[in-house]
Length: 111
Image 1: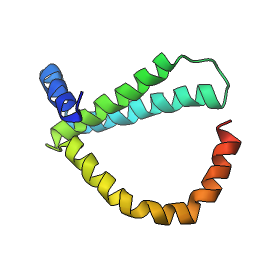
Image 2: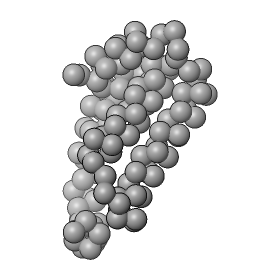
Image 3: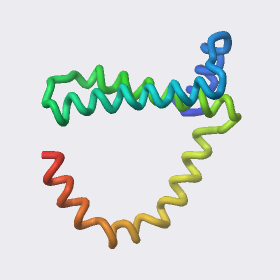
Image 4: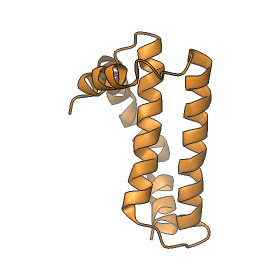
């Protein structure tokens, strides 16, 4: 599904129960907190978790972000494309500045 299709689907599905703008932002914060908790359980407390639970929390964050975009008439798909083009120009500098230290950090924390 394209992001623009997800925005339209969300707007249609939630039109009668959409949060007010501030509530949408608070909802996003709440969902990010739930995602953080799930990652904390996996990474820090070494609790077993299914990818289903983690992917569900990620989907909740995306849905909340889409709700905010819909409130402010932001085409998330187009905004993302523009951001990627901007980041492409920055990646070489980031690789030169942080590539080695990030590779070490990934080996240390992600294994």
